[in-house]
Image (tube, rainbow, N blue to C red; front, side, top):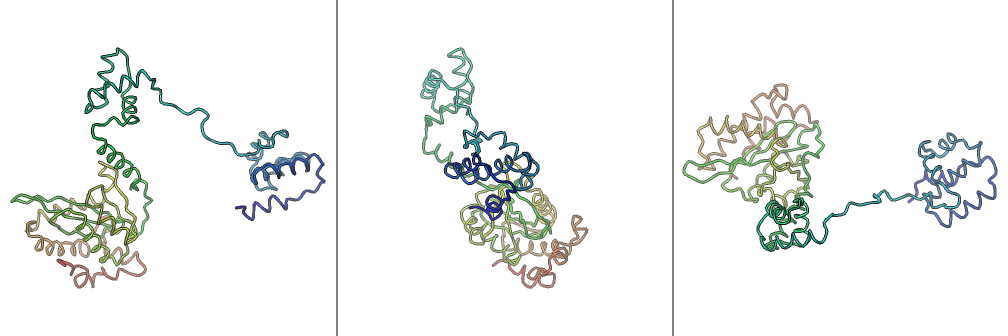
Length: 361
């Protein structure tokens, strides 16, 4: 689709001097053989050769382009080959090919068939020992992949699909953060070990900017409980969350992903084995462990009692405790002063009555 500016440049460009029959012939030929973009470049060339003694500066100003761009196409232009004004492919002329000859491939396949469960490094060692020549483990891996030489092909296919899915995930290191409350919430799961054996799962969340926090204990780390946590968090924030960030745990898949889709919440994932991607929540997890789990008389075995006491601690954390990173304001004070509409459901006067009345429901 041509823009209005492009049409103006092509059709209404002033030619103060008459155009010779030579350039008229070239123009008419270009209309029959060139794309619109190449015809536009041809007009630059015609203007340059027929107006004001080949003035490149005037040509560039007239067509609204840089002199560098004009000289690039002027140097490419050939009167006998108008297609020289067409865009060229930027793909490399020579593409690297896998340098694996048939003899190497046959040897690798024989080794693989003899040792189907051995990895590429072991096969590389056998190859060098048996044939007295070096071969890279990369070549061995490529032959295994191209020939699908796996002991369990279904398992290998699932692994490839899993790797592809991991590549498609939006990673938090590519996220553009904004200094806006509720724009990015971090979510994580803390494992608590019971004295009698077994585990409880404490799901925690914190806002990147305001440091407003929430947490709740569950008996399992199934995705349905992570979904329940997300719905509670949405209610507490009056559906103000814009983006949600978490690690690659299984609790943040299935039901949790469905809930994110229903709430129109983009999911952002941490990089594998990169705790610094979630530094704000890691610090909150340490605080909740030291100041609540270790300091209060709580037993994770009794989930209801634990959550009731946790609610009281969260009220103190969000409403009473000053935060150094917030210039010694509380999270709720910070939101009150940074959101034009206030904080409605989580305002100080409303906290005990509405927000944290969700203790056990």
